[in-house]
Length: 354
Image (cartoon, rainbow, N blue to C red; front, side, top):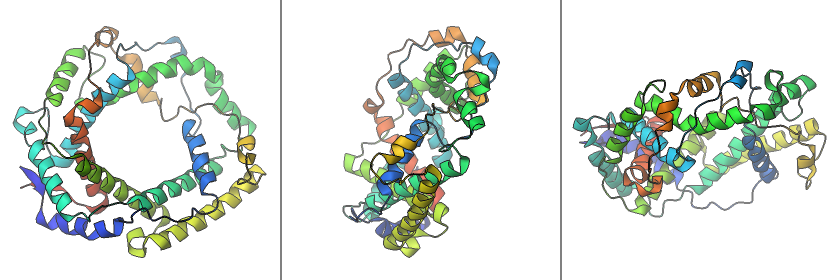
């Protein structure tokens, strides 16, 4: 059986009241909507990122196609992710029949003990929203420093025509790699070689993972797990970005720091773009016409892995895969193992055999 040690409960119980901001309704600082909108524009284009540097030889190669749609691949990827998280956070290998049964008591222990120490109506949305705004400001600053918002002719050429080839010519390859990416990640997490006949061991692993038992957890408790994870992630990111402990100085003081950084960033954005970024429509009109940058999506290792997939094995994946939301092992197991990962990262809390 696994669970929280008594010593681990102290740090978690101590921070939960500080994380419980409620809606913390405040007037967003000037420029908040602009920063969030620009972050969305950048994210939709894979930016900021260095220009993609593909191998021209990739144009002559075609990854095999998969008969599984995106929803099916999402389920496959989630099952592989669950195995990786359970192994990393609980020390439980869900593919080992002798260990898989330990997940249920670990989840039950987390559910019981977390709900026993959480403040009633726990709502960390103030921290979550502030963290999202700060991330948008950081993304804007990175985009400014990288030059992608005001690209020089060489940078624009590199982004519009990687390896001297118009980006549109790369789209067929990129669509194939995008479809294959969840399978590549799952194979890494499950220890499978996609260049071999991976279909039988993949099917066996998925059946085993799908059959792992988890206890029923009420929806409100699952939401609590997710809220605690989101709050810890937000405050950890704020601390890394601002260089101060947000829980030590409190939400209002942290909001003031983010607002000051936002104001400086808006000034820099206006100077670089030559417009008032908060004037309606001004920033959108000044943004450069840039295609999606696939640097993160299609690094050499991922493209090479996609091109190396055994075509016959890929073609045999004509399975009926249930939607992710229909599998309790995922709807319960992923929030639980995700919370365990965030507790370890943010507070150094580990789940230990009890």
